[in-house]
Each structure stands twice: as structure tokens, then as C-alpha cells.
Length: 126
Image 1 (cartoon, rainbow, N blue to C red):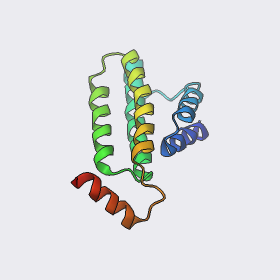
Image 2: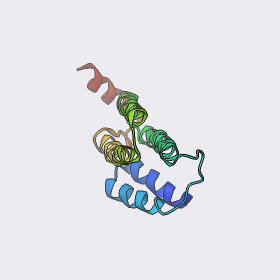
Image 3: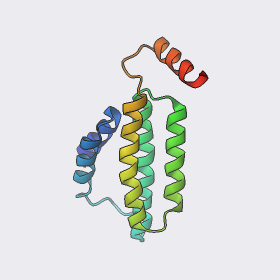
Image 4: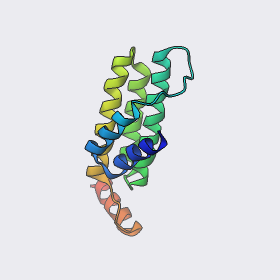
């Protein structure tokens, strides 16, 4: 299970939605220990944890915190307002897609810290 979770997080880090989706499907075959007696609560907990894990991978991919905070906060609110497991599944799939997209469009990995700072300054001050 941990190997599949690592594959999922690595796919997020690289912004690779196809691999993230495959890893998510592989993870879905494992039984996660129940924290609550209610299946909805368990799944909500699972989706919330993955929102945090995805956020950290995007941060590791050198995406500016402004993008990360906006995306993570949006998903936190959506998760909190979800009323059933189907809605949470839709949110989870959307999380995969959008976290991969934010890495594809905003990762500054591979640039030196000085270049990252310069690019961020330009983007956020134009």
C-alpha cells in the first residue's frame, strides 16, 4: 500500500495525471483501517489527508505558496461541505487533476532559488 501511495505522490510531484490516476486506482484495492464507524466519515478523513499530502508534494515541486494555498483551501471547503461519498469521490478526482495541473503550469523545479524568486516576483507584481 505504501509503495502505491508513494507512486501517487510522485505522480503529483511531476504533474502526471495519468500516472496519478493509475496509482489512485491501485490504492483503491487496499482496505484502509477504519477510524470511524461511518463509511462516509472514513472516506472524508481519507480525502482530507490526501489533500494535505498533495499540497506538500506540490510545495516540494517548487510551486509558489499562493497557488498552493488557494487550491488547498478550495478543496478543504469542498470536502467540508460534501454531503455524501459520491461527492467526495468527485472532489478526490478533481484534486488529482488540479494538483497535477498546478504543477504542470507553475512548478519552478529545476531553476535556482534566485531565478525562482525573480520569476515569482514578476508573476505576482505585474
